[in-house]
Amino acid sequence: MICVSIGRGRHKQVIAEHRHLVEQGAKLVEIRLDYIRRAVDLKRLLDHRPCPVIATCRRERDGGKWVDGEEKRLMLIRSVIANGVDYVDLEEDIADQIPRFGKTKRIVSYHNFNETPEDLESIHARMAQLDPDVIKITTMAHHPHDNVRVLGLVKSATIPTVGMCMGDIGTPSRLLCGRAGSPFTYATFHAERTLAPGQLSYRQMVDIYNYDLINAETEIYGVVADPVGHSLSPLIHNAAFRELGMNKVYIPFRVPPEDLGLFMGDCRELGVKGLSVTIPHKEDMVRFLDKIDESTSRVGATNTVLFGEDELRGYNTDLPAAMDSIYRVYGQPEGDNPFGGKVALMLGAGGVAKAIAYGLKIRGAEVFVTARNETRATNLAERLDIRTIAWKDRVSAKPQILINATPVGMHPNVNLSPYDGRKLERGSIVFDVIYNPEQTLLIKEAKKVGCRVITGVDMFVQQAALQFKHFTGEDAPIEVMRNAVRQAIGAAKI
Image (cartoon, rainbow, N blue to C red; front, side):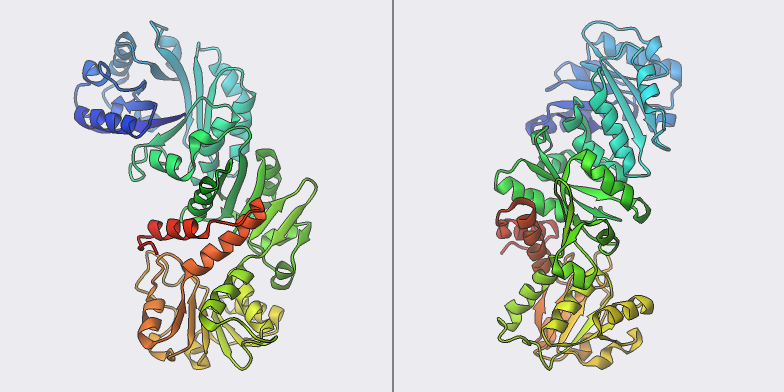
């Protein structure tokens, strides 16, 4: 179950949002009394409540807005209980000052905005002595392993326990705590009004992650990146799972580079079946794999990992997805060297750049690579036996195939382009792997010149569809995935 937190300054706003949430399917809300900017009218808030309520009044030191003194706060909490609220949230240090009364259930809570402490079990044991119906432990995650520790605590608890981590590293715990046995998780009314770091909105929890359908049998997949908040992979993979009625969920894992090894070990404990891999882990991930496909071997980067019983298998779907995207505008290849005699210029030297550059080279193109980081460009060129060109001289290559594999032009920097549009040649192929926005400045300028263009949406959906096939063994609902991306970035459906 999802508990939706409402934090508004006026009673009528709280009441309106409460009713709206129930109409949207919410079954439990938390009313943050500390947000109300005038004397709290409990009868107005509670008498005709459309669903059960958790009443919370949080001090500033606990991340709240209450400033009227502790004595008044305790009086308000006692009044809430006397008015028959369904649940009351009591911080650990005041729980013994608020006696049980009536049918109100007690949530004894602990919040740590600085870290996930080592002594979680002793904290939980201490709170269990305070007559709780539910224990709530919320901590700040600095490492992905913090999720595993908190979820393990939830799973082993004999008293119903809500356990989750704050921050974007902690997002997995918010999505998986119910699977571990938590009676509910928390969400905010709107994505732009979070009441705690890393909180998702109710609609995100329902529409993207299908939270209430996650159970002990749900298979877990996800994307590992740093950062990860911008990724649309959860949107399209979960849309595909939902379309085909699969009991699977795909979640974002933010993993700093130094934590990648420990995270891969944690995946087994979390029950992860497969991962999409993106910046900055595509190359480093290879060293953790037991078996890799030819594309991964040649390129030295993987974007797909499957967890077998005794081995980790890596695949690179960027390469076939990129080639398929190019063929759709170039025409199906004939012979072994369909790009023979063509000059291709690769902007960027990351994992995607390596895959596409390799694919073009083995199909006969003369490939040049350029990047703002000259060392990375040189390393890529040496690995694939291609040529480099200085970033400042990139327009001198006069390519028939231009690929942008840099972030230049990505939202929000939509007025930037990595290449001078005036130097593009009519009829050439311009491929921008950026998918948000789909119509980058480079793509717009290429269209004006009369180039054949490939957008990042094309490749993003193709590589995701191939990942989906690896994950499930089933063909992906490609149009569902493509429409999900375009809706998310504000483009029209096709």
